[in-house]
Amino acid sequence: MDRRTISRLAHARHPIAAPLCDASVAALLERALAPDEQGRALDLGCGRAAWLLRALGARPRWRAVGVDVDAAALTLARESAEALGVQRRLGLHHLDAREFTDRRPFELVLNVGATHVFGGLLPALAAAREFLAPGGRVLVGEGFWEREPSAAAPAALGAAREDYADLATTVDRVTADGWTPVYGHVSSRQEWDDYEFSWTGTAAEWALDHPEHPDAAAVRAAAELHRAQWLHGYRGTLGFVTLLLRRD
Figure 1 (tube, rainbow, N blue to C red):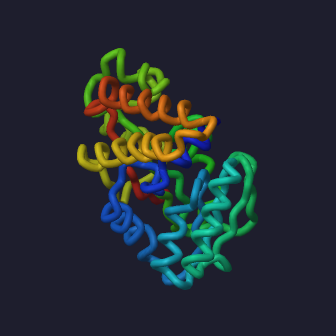
Figure 2: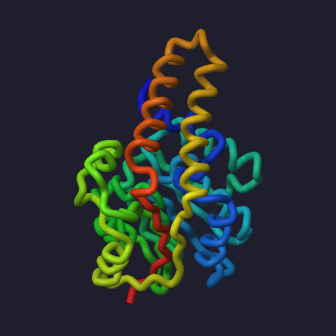
Figure 3: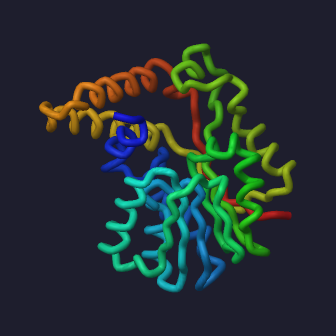
């Protein structure tokens, strides 16, 4: 079973693919959507479009577009949109986010936990800027080092030490690039633990419930590996910040 499928299974009970609780997601969206009664939102790497679905549910005059390479995740997004009655206001594109184009600007551009698609935080912001309407906002989520990492943390993440900076440096890089944070949220330890236990537990439970499935052992092994990497590698070391940004 490929990594996208395992991730999709693991996020079944935590559709927001980041360490954010429902209250944090609601607060971020409330600030991101508040300036405009109507507008357009774009998620570059939307997965199951959980952010966009919540935005459309909260703002009946908004429309949204999601882009992702995972066709199965987009199918789930369409099913959820139909169940919520917002399918006519949501456009989904099975496409690499780097290849997406649109002539009309967006009042809100999102990239939460998917900056790697563009090669990092600043390249992701550069991509978002291309779609941003004047006065628009970007909601971006990125990891940072809460403390100096041991060798185990980057290894567990499949990352290099320099892939992340501390929080202050991360924000400094964003502001030096011409962006102003107008809101933000640093995920708590509880949010991280809930997210990771949900990820690993949901995948493991799927394997337990489908013992005859040819991929059951692979899914369970992936859950066990992920849990070990988190608990013995980056727990308490990797943080996550979600920033709401405007251009100067």
